[in-house]
Every structure is written in C-alpha cells, then in structure tokens.
Length: 251
Length: 242
Image (cartoon, rainbow over all chains, first blue to last red; front, side, top):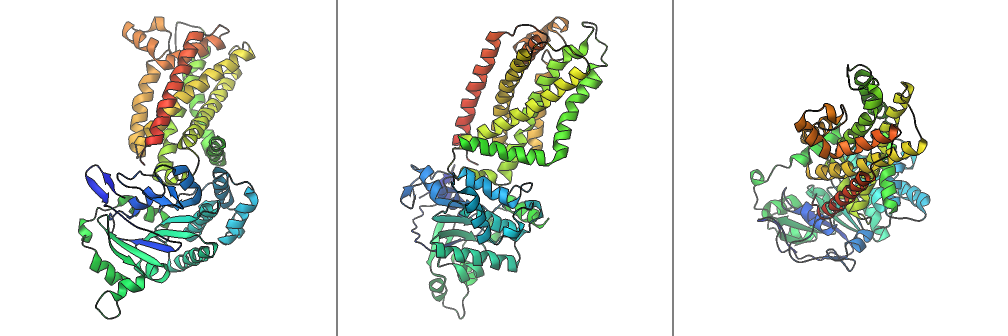
C-alpha cells in the first residue's frame, strides 16, 4: 500500500499483516503513522495497493469496514456541552445499535465512568475524556480498534489506567492497532511493534526481538528507535496542530 | 437517513444548552427592526416597518446560514469529522443534518422577528401566506447553508471564514430589495438587485406577508437552485479529504 500527497510519498509500499494482537506503530513525527491509520479507517484512499480488515477491502467495501472498526483520533473530539452518556448515546445511534440504553450503560461501566456519566464532559479530566472516547468506540463491539496516540498529554496514572483498559479489551478479542511516541509503553504493552521512518518499515517484531537485535547491554526500545530512524528531529515538520491539541488539553 | 436526525439532535441540544446563544441570536435582528425599521426617515412608504420586516427575516436567515459554517469548521478542527466519517453513516447525512439544523435555527430567528413586528403593529393577512413565507425561507436557508457548509469544509480557520462570510453576505444583503424598492434604486443597483437570489426571497416574502400572491416561477427557480447546489455539495463532501 502506498500513499502520495502530490509528489510527497507519505507511505512507501507498506506491506504489513496484523493478527489478533496489540500492534504498535512507532516512528518520528511526520513518518506517516497517522496517514497509515487514516487510510485503514477509510478516511483516505491509498494511491496504490490496498488493505483488508476482517476480510473487507478498505477501498471497495468501506462501509463494511466501518462497521467492524473504531477509530479514536489523537484530538479528543467530545462535545463538552453534552453529558458523558449523551456523547456515547450519539455513537450508539449513529452505529444503529438496537438495545441502545443497555449497551451505553455497559460500555460506560466498562470504562469506570458510570458515576459521572450524567455530568457535562466540560467537567471531565483528560484521562476521563479519553476513557469516554474508548467507551464511544466500543459501543458497537468493533473487532479492530484504531488508537492514534491514546495516551498523549496524559499524566502517568491516567496513562496507566488507559492501558489497563486497553489490555482488558484483549479479553473481548479486540485487535488493537495503535500509534505512540512513548517507547516504554510500546515495550510494556504491545505484542508486536513496527518502527516506520519516511513511510517505510525499518523494524518489525516483538519488543523483545527488536531489543535483542542490538549489540549493547540492556537495550531499551528507545535505543532501537534511535538506531532505526534516520530522520533527524530538526528535519521533521513541526506539527502545530498536534501541539495545540496538547495545550488545549491542559486547560 | 436516521443519522441526519441524530446529527441534527446533537447540534440542537448543544445550541439550547447554552442560553446566551439563543438570546444573542434573537437580539440582532430585533435591533434591526427597532433601530432601523422604526427610525429611518424614508419617503416611499408611510409604514417602513411593514416594508422592512420581510427583508430582515430573509437577512437573518442569510446571516444565520452563513455564520453556521463555523459549526463545520469546529467539527473539522477539533477532530469530530475524522470520527464521524469513519463511521457507517454516509458523509452526506452529516451535511444534511447540519443544513437542517442551520435552516431550522434561521427560521427560529425569522419567527421571532415576525412576532416582534406583529407586536409593533404590522398587518397579518392569512396563515397560509405566513406558512408559505416560511417554506420559502426554509428553501432559501437550505440553499445558503449548503454553500456555507461546503465553503467551511475547505477553510480551516475561523478568522478566514469570518472574512469570507462578510465578503459574501454583506454585498448580497445591500444589493437586494431588503432596504428599498427597485424604483428608488439607482439604475446600476436595480440591475444587480433584480438578479440577486436574496431579492427573490424577499420579494416573495413581502408579497405574501402583504396579502398578495407569490411569484410561483421564482419559487420553483429557488427550489431548483437549492437542489442543484445541494447535489454539488454532497459530491464535494463525499470526495473531500480532511
């Protein structure tokens, strides 16, 4: 699968197979992580090649794909003037869930939000908002969950809590495809990771395999990352959009 | 099709939950009626308020439609569109829900203006003429809401959109028959005003609210224009890259 924006090659002949697992996509800013996710969730069409999710082709059967996936982008898009429950209910309606009320209560319970579900989202913390987004994403029992930097801008305890929830989803047989900048998290929680640079995969395997491929003592995933990435930080385009999103979360 | 209603519901709850929103939306047009309608020293009619009311009703629908493009910009910039467009409902349900809400909100404003004008003593003719006026306003609102949402989809900053908004709506309003009849306009303005879709809505509303018969051909033209623009907008929404 490839994606070009005019002459800029954002995804370069990507060939990847993801099983029922937690799969982490790592890479520097501008490496093409978000573009890959946006192609897979049918927001963008690949320029060349294709991909299939649960047997459905992303280009030819986008509607079927949308029924089996959920996408949580990095921006945290929630209606702050609606209550937590109303936010989830909107998704249940849009997905055409039959037993709406029960399902909404169930996912809110799953994400530990039942106590606060009738409060306006305006009053929620960053971690709660992210959990509410996960609740929205789970309302139609997806088979694959796409998370774009799920823990960006959250404190340690909120991040750990999100991760525990993500791990518990594995018991429901949900495949998780995620991007992150936090190597420690990828190391601890992902079954397999891929490191991409300039739209190409430069490393693929379990965190353990990647670490043991380095010939240094006590390697971390950070070392693997630095080893595989040739893009220097100052070559990366500054993503002001993402930066603003982070700042907004602090307010 | 249900999704259209759910998107409408979302905007509606958000709008009504912030009371200032509603109040603010109603004050501006009322100010026009009171500060312009009751005070301007015009000579072509002895009841300027009655003349002006249909123009202000159309104006508030026009302004409300265009301003509401901001809703789309917010949804886009804050990431809502990314989520919505990765869900099963067709993209156009979002567009139609927005157009429905925007036109509805414009009609709410127009009804308040009408009520205020009635309080100030304009003559009310028949209920059917009022209903037909609101139908025309709805078509008119939907036409401009389609244009506004589609422009907004292409623009991603509020400042830029506000500039585009003012650039389009102000000339459209002033070059229409809202404030004065064609006979009192200079020749060049008369030509522009007579082909302006805003005048088309105003002339019909004025005719109907004044107890006369509407120009059926013009209403059909307006409806056809709204349908054509809507089809184009649906196409743009379907193929848009966010």
